[in-house]
Length: 81
Image (cartoon, rainbow, N blue to C red):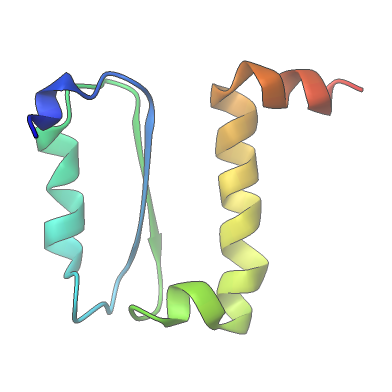
């Protein structure tokens, strides 16, 4: 896979204390992807915590929704109603 061919907007969410996918490995996507519309969201937590912790449940879905509203026309249309 040649990540330079990725031209669509990218939202890269990663955990700051992830020992399985270190943050530096996740952040490397920015330089590898071919898109200029790249957003990173770092989450204070570990590999599993980004999915199951109470903080993740409060913070991550809202951040994804906000990003989608800015990037996906269908979501923009829904939010206008």
